[in-house]
Image (cartoon, rainbow, N blue to C red):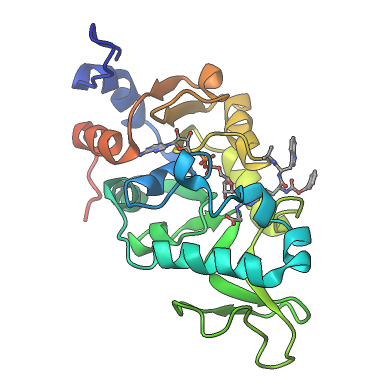
Amino acid sequence: MLSASGEYSMDEEDFRPLIELLSRTERIAILTGAGISAESGIPTFRGEEGLWKKYRAEELATPSAFSRDPKLVWEWYNWRRGLIAPVEPNQGHKILAKWEKVFPGFCLITQNIDGLHQKAGSKNIIELHGNIWKLRCVKEGTITDNRDFPLKEIPPYCPSCGELLRPHVVWFGESLNYEILHRAYGLSSSCELMFVIGTSAVVQPAASLPLMAAEVGAKVVEINPDPTPLTPYADFSFRGKAGEILPLIDKNLNRSSGA
Ligand code: BV8
């Protein structure tokens, strides 16, 4: 909570009501954004280091930018793959991977395309916006895993039809995959509690998921160093870093993975 020096300090007292709630929660949903990967060294989108050359993400992560200059867009994604390839998941990712075994009705919904949740051991993940380590043929739609860094050719071409390959991610102005989105809607509107971690809660439709959870009476727990448009709707809003707060909550959790 806010201390006299204006510093946010967290002590166990602050978590007691949440721990009590978690002790009787089965169906828990998690929504993550770029903030959970910040402590692994991945720049967030809206943080000042989120810019590449002078471009904002919304300028490059669009179908029109790709049709205009696929080489430029691929240089950006190659740069991001280079940032992500060497880093390790942090405590935040690891606690969520552990909780997957602790809470029977656990699901993880992420906006991130970095694959760090999988690297931390999470299995049951919904990737709303795709994955930077997958490529898709613009003509045939075939999806292939590719972890090359640097990419052998920029832009890369489809080995079977010679057409351009694109990152298997959702760009601004593009609809999300129907099955994936509706699974996320279903889990959001059937959970008892949703953690919202490291997202500025601006990008739609992802930002609506916590509101869908609140609408069905689920508790919303936000973790973010800064307030967001979601904060007024949250039952708990912890000001701090995911990699610091999640271990604190986990330490107080009197639930074991039974492992
Ligand atoms: C769509 C993949 C149908 C690509 C991404 C309604 C109103 C207004 C606009 C719209 C609307 N509906 C649709 C739109 C348009 C648009 C949109 O929402 N625009 C925004 C900018 C307003 N949405 C779309 O286009 C979506 N498609 O709706 O299709 C349609 C189409 C057109 C028109 C109508 C309907 C597609 C959206 C998906 C785009 N693809 N990523 C790629 O990555 O290259 S989005 C991308 O940006 C990320 O995936 C993520 O979703 C988003 C970034 O947000 P965050 O993850 O929250 O990151 P951010 O940097 O913003 O914030 C980080 C937070 O972490 C901060 O709050 C910070 O304080 C905190 N933090 C920092 N450190 C830590 C921390 N927290 C915890 N611990 C720390 N250590």
